[in-house]
Length: 505
Image (cartoon, rainbow, N blue to C red; front, side):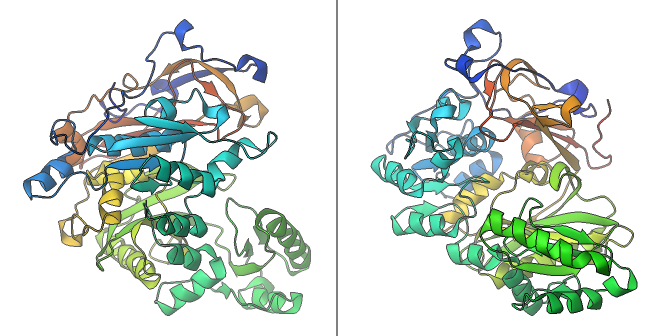
């Protein structure tokens, strides 16, 4: 099997290019995989064991890896890598590791025992529940057990993916303390950016633009009311309340009238305390017509830092991204350089190492008026659109930087080409307000045969011309579990440098 990375001609939508059918069944029926009764590939990748003595082959390596071989550098930063995650992102991580001739180790919860990321690894190990009634996600949050498995199986490095433990500073510190390499920033950087109020103070000192607002320690109603008026509430301009440790829209309230402020503060504080164990709020001016523009940054441990251009993630539902594209429409060269420079300053301010994303909010009518929102200290779900326009493998970059290597390219060497869009494909019931669906994937049709690469390596590596890519952790016949996120796959399309990528029904 080959990994689902390649593409065909561009310009068809998820609705017609990517079909999926889910049949709901009771948990009692989810005892054994039913792939034998359904046509389609049985797995996404064939595992390939690697030994220290094995000669490094060049077939199957990315173009970047081949180039590094020519410079006398080893294409394998580590011998054995653990993907401490599940589904699509675990498959994605192991694909990069396999192309670099690294052995892969997967972990899986009991509910994931038939999952593709388990079978796609060279070795996979069950995460045991501490108690029989523990929730399914608890297995992937068990720091002690994950590190114990890694050490027992002689893993060199752990990649956390996104979600779960990816932004847990204690996990990052524990991995390093165990003598292993954490594929991500140091715990100190995570802590600096993990608290929105502290992060804003750091950004202010670094000269990164901020929305007018308040992120102080005094949380009294009198202070919040005064600061809201200072941000324009008394003149009719809306303000936004945010939980200091928030995410996913929790602890967030829009306030348009002074009379609504007290109730909104109380409601946001309750939700923040219940969700994050911290009721503190920050307050900032709310932009009704706003765009979400984020910048991909990369830093090494030697002081190098670059940005890999921007993405527009303004198409959202319930504060969750649905479509992402790169480069952002309407962002010219000068603004791109300004956004990138601000993002790099933000990363350097916290001693960042690895891949990170600095998120900005911008006025829709004046995108050059942009302001810092937060920094995600991990690889983003939408990283493939950046890979599509840059021709780079960001997971490979993560591995090399974590191994102590300098950034493979400097800022002047980075080039943007083409335009890419990513659509997240979910198992949902549209008639039930898009509520998550579960059951067996009776039908799964993708732009290319799952697990095969259609676009030649030269096209994938150069970001030249049209291409289509599918990142997924499922094949036909798999079960979509009730226990995890219902995302089945990500469909990423790219057009050449002279035209925009587009989708139509």
